[in-house]
Amino acid sequence: MNQSLTYDFASLPKMVEDAGLMQSVCTIQAPSGNLGVSGAPDGTYADVTGLVNLPCMNAPESVGNIAATEIKNIAEIMSVSLRHVLLNGYYSQLDGLNWGQIGWHAIVDGVEYDILGAERDSQFSQTRLKLRLVTI
Image 1 (cartoon, rainbow, N blue to C red):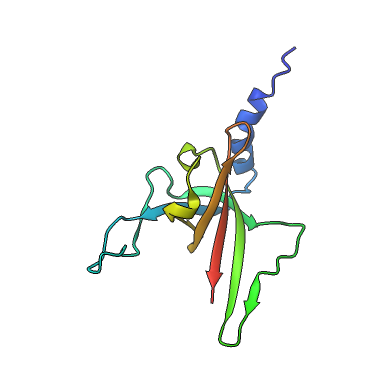
Image 2 (cartoon, helix red, strand yellow):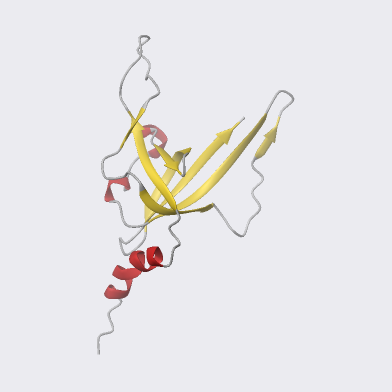
C-alpha cells in the first residue's frame, strides 16, 4: 500500500486550475533600471521573464477580519487595499527577495499593486503573494 502524499500534492495546482478557481491573470514587473535626465529612476517597469500572464486567484487579504485601512485627513482620504494572490504554481524566482527594497509590482487583472511579500507552500507547489494598492 502506497501511503505517500507526494502524488496528491503534485496534482493540486492542476486540480485548482481545472476547478476554475484561477480566474485572474498576474504579471510581475521590475523597475527598468533606466534613469531620467535628473539621474533618478524613470518610473518605468519591465515584465520579469517567466512571470507574465500567470493564472491566479485574487482575494482579499483576510476573509475573517474587517480591514479598517481608510485614513481620513482634511485634505484627502487615503485608502489601502491589501490582496492575497495565489499563483497557479511554484515560482522560485520570487523566493527570498527583499520586497521592501526591490520595488517590484504585480499587475492583476489590469490593476497595478506593490508586492509586499511572497511565500511558497511547504510542498513547493504554489506561490502566494501579498499585494497592496494605495489610492488617494
